[in-house]
Each structure stands twice: as C-alpha cells, then as structure tokens.
Image (cartoon, rainbow, N blue to C red; front, side):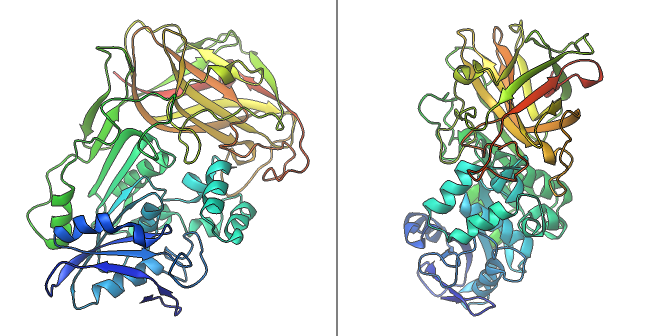
Length: 509
C-alpha cells in the first residue's frame, strides 16, 4: 500500500527477480485491476526488472475516490510522481524507474511525465491521449459521447466524473491540468508513442510525439519514437471493415528490449533506429496495388505538398477552384435524426475503415467525388477541411469524412472529424455565430498515410452529425444534448470565390 502525499494508500503489486537486487523498476498504473497483469510481469522479471502494477486512486484495492486521471498529473495531488519516487527509494531498486502500458495505462504515463519525477527515466505509451480535452473528452469542441459515457459508466466510475466533464465543455483550467502540451518544455524523458490510423487516440499519439520531439525539455527533445500501425484501438478492425495487410500488430520496430535496457540499466548505446515508423495504407484485395507497407522516416510529418481539393455544386471534387463565386449547397439537420456512426476511430463502437454509402445517400449529407484517378495518389500527413458556412440556428456542428471509393462503388472511410461552430476560433472562448452570418470553420481530420490506387476516386462527405460517436448538437445554443429542447438547423456550405470550401491533402509526389 504505497502512501500518497495526502495520506491515501494505493494498492501496488511488486514482482521481483530472484535474489536481493537492486533492480530497475517498470511501472504500470491501471484503472482495470492490477490482478490481470501476471503474464506481463513474468516477461519483465525474466529480463531483470521489478514489475510494479498499481490500482489507480479509488479503483479496486486502492483507497480514496476515483478521479478519472485528475490526480495523476502535476496538480495538487500527484499520484504518479509519488509512486515513482517511492519505488526509487526502496532498497531493492537501483533508482531507475520506467513505465509501460496502453490506453488508460498510457494516459497515466502522459500525466506522470508532466509531473517530472526525478527518477523517471523513460516511458513506453501505446494508444493514449496526452490531452484529455482535445483527444478524449471532446473532439472539435463536441463531446465524444459513446466513448466518454461508455467508458466511465461501463467501468463504474463515480457519476461525479461524467458530470464534471459535461459541466466543462470549453477548454479551461481543469482541462489544462490534463494536457501535457501545457508543460511539455519541462518533460525530460525519452518516450515511445505507439498508435494506429483507426485508433480513437490517433491524433493524440502524433501530437504527443511532435510536441515532445520538438518542444520538450532536455532529455525529451530529439529522443522520441513514433510508431503508427494500420489498426484500431483494439488492434483489429470490426467485421465489415477493411483488414490492411500485414497485420495491424506487426511492426519493424523490434528494439524495445534493447531500448529499455539502455534507458534503465545503462547497457549499450541507444538503439540506432529511425524516429518514425508508419504504415502506408493501400487498396485491399487488389494484387499489386501500391502501399500496404511499413515505412520509416527521420521525423513526422514527412515532406509533402499541401494540395487543396475544392467542392463543386455539381458534386465534383477537384484540384481546380470553382468558377461560380456564388455557389452554395444547403441541407436541414435534425438532431432527432442524426447521421449514424459507421466505423471510424472508435473505442466501443464498430471500428475501422467501413463503407459509408448508406449514410452518403441521406438528404442531410453533401457528397463531393473526384474523377477516377489515372495514377496512384499518396496522401501522408495531417488532413483538414476548410468550410465557409452559415446556419439559421444559434449553434450547430459541421462534420467531414474523407473516403476511398473503390471501382465497385464502396466508399471506405479513411479519416473524419467534427467542429462545433461556437468553437470555430478557439476551444476556450466560445463565440456563437449570429444566424445567417457567414464564417470559416476548419475541421481537423487528424492524420493518415494512404495511397489511393489508380481507378479509385477520392470523396469528401460534409454534414452536421455523426452519432453516437459524437453528441448530437441540439441547435439551440445549449452546450450538450441533455434530452431537452431541440430544433432543426438549416445549414449552408459555400463553394465559390473567396469562400471556396475545400479539403487540404498532404500529397507526397
């Protein structure tokens, strides 16, 4: 029972190699029950480490009330910091502590790194969010309803945690205390960041790497590794989604054992590896199609050319700008009948690259499709959609999806995103748009690496909902849909002149 600074004790299992030691320690902190980590412990002990696994505050055998990561960072209570320093002070420890784990066990590592324990030497983080506002609780200012509600209630966290998240829809001091970027310049440790193109935290994985690699403190800056595979949060895609080959759990990075040995034991030189490993997606089921291969790079993003592809009133998607300065398309969005979620970067919904044709036929979805490609086109990097919009509602949302249209008509999701109109300028200062006024809004689709094959088309679908992945906007100005008043929004997307809405593709020539 490891003591925290406020007198609360956290239950921690210790697995030790034979003998007296001392040994370095590898730590995992979990909300799921420490008793499930025996297999991993055996591997670590065999390599000469003490493996420590701890129930987070208020979870399973630990004391206190659960706080859903709020006491795991650099605030008044610092459970991760206190645990690392307690471990380092034990007579059987060399004073070197590293961490490992994915998902929630990765989030605890990002929060821990921001508290800067003196004896923390390295972190291996898989599929996790470094900012709980931008990459977990809210996306584009919209509550990630299925993930947040499903995870907190499904794992029986105290109801106060969900209520607190919903009570803070803007990025404020509560969220700043759970955003590693706010304290990145004082982080001092090397990290491995592992993610997947269809993982619910993918954007956060890449953001954490870029932030610490270029803006971290001494010891962190220049010492980060990024690995992005083709998988989802669970590794494998759901039934009906594309299965990219080779398998999502395979990676050319095989120096983890050597990396830990150098960082925690001082053995050998740092592994001579590239900083970035990423899987370039390609057409599935088309022998000889380019892509579907692992690549390496010195940094992320890789060199590319930002190429705007414009939306035309005819439904075309083209690298040529529309000539009609007055072009526009409109639709009615009913929050009682939102566009249903079909695949994507989900946690507890069907996930992966799934066919979007069913929802593309709806009247509240605008679809823009390119001509069939005459040669392959590679898109690798950060994807954004710039819209010029207006609405007759006090507030509404805009969504965008990029899909790969196969010759047989399947429209397979590549990446997507959403933006709440009141957060078009910033997430900390909501600014309602007066009904009828035109404004620009940028939708972040996160990143991808894909080679669209010859004969395929690119498609962008624009709408105002994607439910239950995201909470449907009631269009009343209320911050979330609480089941109360709802109204229909008449939304318009502008397509010409200085208001030529478009997607920006990072094209690799």
